Length: 405
Image (cartoon, rainbow, N blue to C red):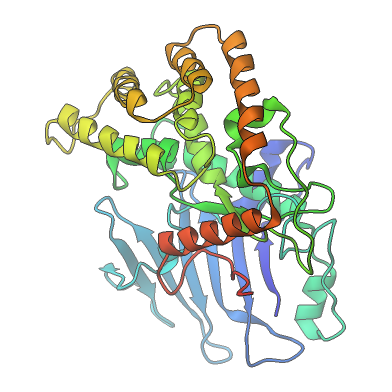
């Protein structure tokens, strides 16, 4: 029962990253009908996202066919500055769209929670995608479905398109465009607290699986954002009929893109970013410690804004507030001595090579004492998936289908 993502046609220089906009500027999803056989992909309705050069956001549409030979119907969905998902419908044969009205269950934004493109298994081995590692048999397929699957591009190509589209959406290319800028300016809901939330807590997820060449995902034990250069020796994945972990939830590209955009605008430094990750270096996501500090950040932001919804804090004010809150929380976090010294140095922006070396040694010692048995790896896999189900409990959600065995 394949699904397909059809992107725009990139006739530019594919060696130029800027040409990827030709692909992500228009994308549609085709989903198989469960009651069909052979030619299962349904051409209607079409769910379409289109990049808006003016706002730097993606516009969402659903196109629905009507009787043969008659115009179809199109409905647009968007999120307003109050956080409500709105819809406006242009019915078949009409020249004027209906008045905008709220949608009852958030429509497209139940899955596209931040309004960006989605590709759950965004990184190698691209589980559930046609990729350099796996083809999809077409022996039981026919018609357009077989044609599309036979000619499909590979997931590593789509990965580049989705990453580029998400970066453009989050960071924007102009002062008033993009998710971060428009949220900061009150054109999308949440304000400053919303744009700094990805530094501390997960708002989306991506997923990665064990692989025969890549081995065990490092996120099973540590956050690679701060531990990658420690040269830690992780165990092999548990043996079995399928990879363990399989579809392991990890930090989303959207949240990492927000982190980079905040640094570019001087809301944080690279040292502050590292210090925030060091709050809980064993969990890239679902960290009670890191999200607990964000609770303090929200409270202090509310005080600084003084209840004025339209008050806009300058980046330097946000930076100092974040430093102050993180510094105040550090004695309560139960950090190992080397991690605490390294975190202090990164937060202060001082030279930290020796402190990082000591921290790397401490990491290796900690890994040595961890339970790395197959049972422990499986338990971490199960716990992450349960947390993902709790993050997105709605019936239509952005999670992949998790295995039940």
